[in-house]
Length: 237
Image 1: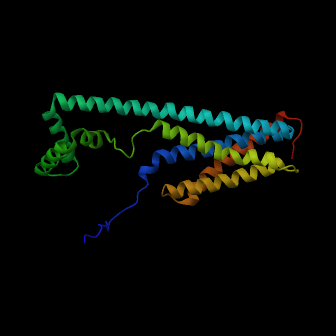
Image 2 (image 1 turned 135 degrees about the vertical axis):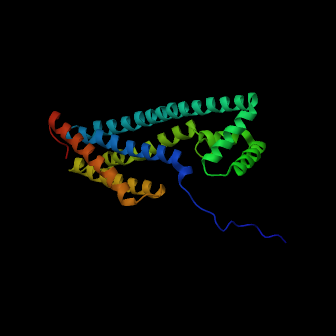
Image 3 (image 1 turned 180 degrees about the vertical axis):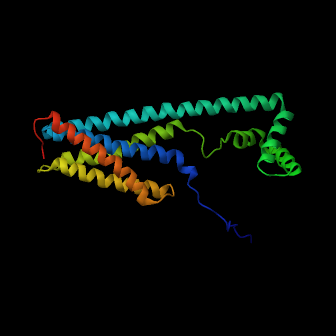
């Protein structure tokens, strides 16, 4: 009976998460910070709770669609570039295969292989899948990092909604005094947690991730509250 093979040197890396992680973190940060900032400014200006709830909901809806559209367009442009590069490489492999083989051999030599080994590797990889070899080793395009516009758009929109929900729920459920202070405190706490989680998922120190998000969040909240106080008629709380 043959036992299943287990790789004793199996490693876990975070690079393959870079695309969706970037979109998700950006969406959640933007959803939380922009919606909270909007509501804090309105609350500091003395706006009543009904208008605050409408403002928060409108900010959530518009922001989610904006993030999805922006991410889709941006990543689609990257995908277009990758597709164009793929077409160029495929055409060059068909028209001048020997020159492409020499180019691939040169890449491996510059990476430290001996001329004989570089030529052998280039021949074998060309025989296996010439296009994938050139895309990976010449252009840096792999299955892990290729552009996925729809995935990025959905991740951005979904994470924006998740980030924007806390300020909406606070306005909806909290009826007491000190709404502005509560919104600011909750936003900063959630931003710090989000920054720490994002850093953890990306393999970076959690404290550093929390601190850099918290710094900019505090500036944004302070600016929103100040503008509301300057141009409003009185704070809600």
